[in-house]
Length: 512
Ligand SMILES: Cc1cc2nc3c(=O)[nH]c(=O)nc-3n(C[C@H](O)[C@H](O)[C@H](O)COP(=O)(O)O)c2cc1C
Ligand SMILES: [Mn+2]
Image 1 (cartoon, protein in one colour):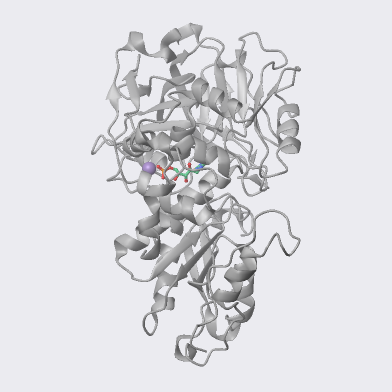
Image 2 (cartoon, rainbow, N blue to C red):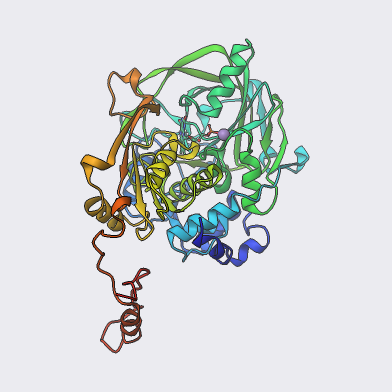
């Protein structure tokens, strides 16, 4: 991680010198509205399929705004729905975490590494100071069917209350609280289905409680600020707390407050929170949902059901939702690609392998889960093969990823023109491709049959670095002489071009 370290701090915008300027979802919405990054839809929209259709069509470009649906058909609760909160927008990601929105993607990844490594633990605030407690419902007063709960796609198996959510569970052994983002299907006035993939922490916690014959407590928030939402979808080791990392990113502690019926805390500034329990053996048919893969997944199957014991919400709550679709219309877009890439670079640094320069999980590859490209400076025999194998199985990249590619340092992993060039000119398929089998994946991958085998994935490892034994005699790539490049840039407007002159970063070796 040599070259980039020094440039990290200057990318962290002035905002970050203190806490971020927004403190909850409402002030975040005000901030993006000021930047022209929000569209309010005041006309009535049906949460059944129409909301999904408007969102899909409005998000066909990577700079499309966040969408606030103000009036949902049939709703008597005065709820609103925010969707495409971050989506494919690098600008909204930068605004959410206090980075310079004009930074390049590799710069944002490096800056993200530093802000994700300054944890601040959460604090508890009194219940009566928690905005989420404006309305508290328990027992027979709970009726989630009154709220506008979308069906996104024509083939969805139900209404999904949890898509843009965060979900808290705790380990019975250590008490450590996990924050994940898992889909949740409405199963009745006080029943919610919860689907977690194999190996995910929410599932491991639930299995550990059920193995003891005890119910697993759950807290889920369906109207949540962008940082907690983004952090819930990152994979951290169980020794690290997603809540602490979120606090670090915001420059102030996450505020929690006591729940009514469970021992887990609830996020104090959320818009809408449910508390409940998953009782051992209680399952109901769940799914499918039109997913991040661009397909329905997984097939309808029995999944745990939460019995909802309390509901908290702000008046006229803003429910956050996430459309799952092909890029760029998927909520898991730019932010996920950047944060996942930052986590992969952290993992490789912790392992201690030298020479790694950059990484990128492009969001068009099934929300970044499908592919990882790592760039590196080759230092010794077998080095590129080592980085390739470690990248394939490091914790942040192991899940799902099918295509793992390693490239030399002159290739920008976030630039697909560069990556395809390296694949087409430096990789010799008969020498440079290996396959790993029975790797960690998910029931949502449509490519494997029979369907029960889907969680067993496979990965192709592609070495697109110049062959080490031919580094000296490998044909030179066509690069400009730096002095000529600089002169042409200076003459750019004289030559009749408008706008800033393009800039190259690698040059013809001066001696030849
Ligand atoms: C909008 C959205 C929906 C998601 N839905 C699911 C889901 O239904 N089940 C699942 O296992 N993971 C889902 N994920 C992925 C997990 O959030 C992600 O794998 C994360 O690492 C889980 O947290 P954990 O590592 O603490 O288990 C979703 C992510 C996002 C952003
Ligand atoms: Mn976790």
